[in-house]
Image (cartoon, rainbow, N blue to C red; front, top):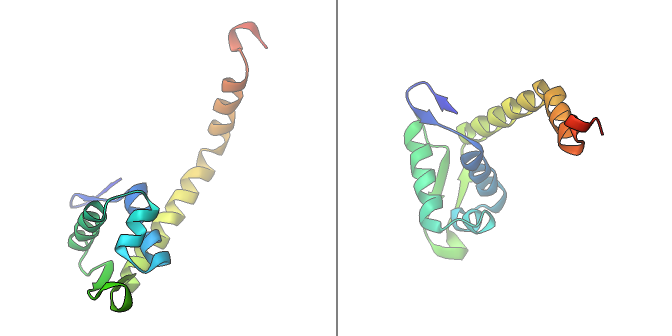
Length: 111
């Protein structure tokens, strides 16, 4: 989805935020999502640039000292995105069930 001002936020960026929150590392989050570190870092940079304050903060230093975490705003953005996602799924539940039913039977033959 595109927010006002051209901010793009979708399932991939939400999954990355969630993985960073769980793993405590951009590299580990990228691995979890089968994404290169360069791609993960680029998405984090884009997210941080798109909001007034960073969504992810990171520190250098390798496995012993480094890491990354979601900021308060990052947690709020992820929670709001997941809430919107749940509302969307609930709103289209009947249509999804109808499509699933159509996929299971041959409508032209009534079976």
